[in-house]
Image 1: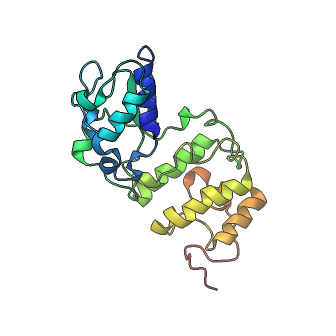
Image 2 (image 1 turned 60 degrees about the vertical axis):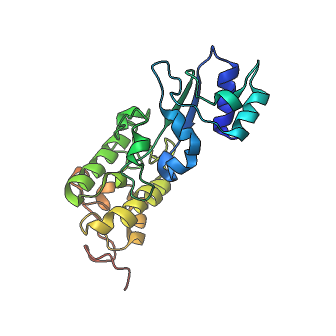
Image 3 (image 1 turned 90 degrees about the vertical axis):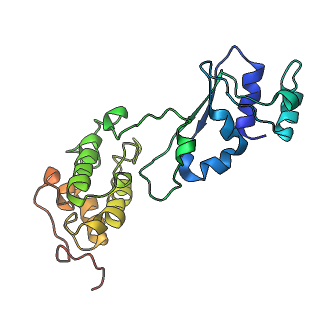
Length: 238
């Protein structure tokens, strides 16, 4: 049995306890197809019980065998009980995933969760560039990406983009954060990096660990080191 079936059995067998099923990145697959007949059970009444029953022979047979007490799901049908909650996460701005159709989406209560560096415990912690906290770095970069580059929201830096132990690691900081900006964000803008080659970006940042040396953002502005190549041309050809 899958995760849904297991938690469904637990909910039936423990009606006095609340049960939770968490689905991460719901739109990584065709949600309606993955849910199948469970799709019908997502409509709930005021008590949280499915309004419509599903008559699935195989699942009903399994429930009749595993749910305590006398049951007859084959005849009565299957409904999600009121003590079972399903929570799913998704990034609706991510262009590389499946779109959720309206009929499926309306069966959920949606809550938008914006990028907020104050929600992580290390938001006010210094980064590899000790002059700036993780919140200052992330918000400054995102402001530039939104207002200057005009890129989609899914390309912004989220508060969990780097873990707590990564924000102070200069190598990880350069490889993950600066590397992402170079390969994804910078292709929409010629003015984000001071250097022409990413090898120069890495080397200069690793030497001095100053964002002002590699990024042109006003928030990090300083005496930038231009490296071995002219500014503004990102071709790696000599």
